[in-house]
Image (tube, rainbow, N blue to C red):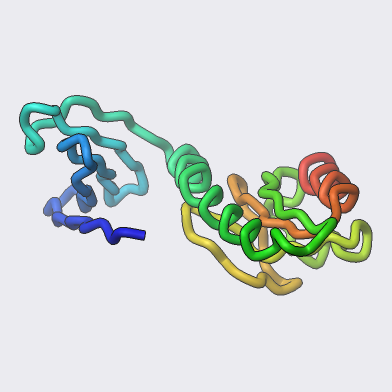
Length: 160
């Protein structure tokens, strides 16, 4: 994996701007406001210092986008790790029913035989969460198990 140089620019009284140059010659980034709001920004193709588009995001929308961007990489890595183990699969599952509850309250391993090996929140992986880990809205659970176990886990995490 090639490292990407993220530039962080303080915006006095506003927050911070974090962005990086993509291969197409544009800058993509996020402005994080002091009040908790976010703004996704994209520079003009002709001038990387000029903004072509900005999309305001609520904290929940930013968390969801971060999960969408970060979780597939984690799941791909785990799939690669388990590719030689017959019958074991890795899946990312949204946690809706158990938001604001602990992992232990799901009794997921006991009920399904599947295990949550990480939780992706705001693009950050929380590996090996313990039973006292508290889920939040927008979390994606990275679950390992059999196909039947993963189907049951999806039902529990999404439907109760």
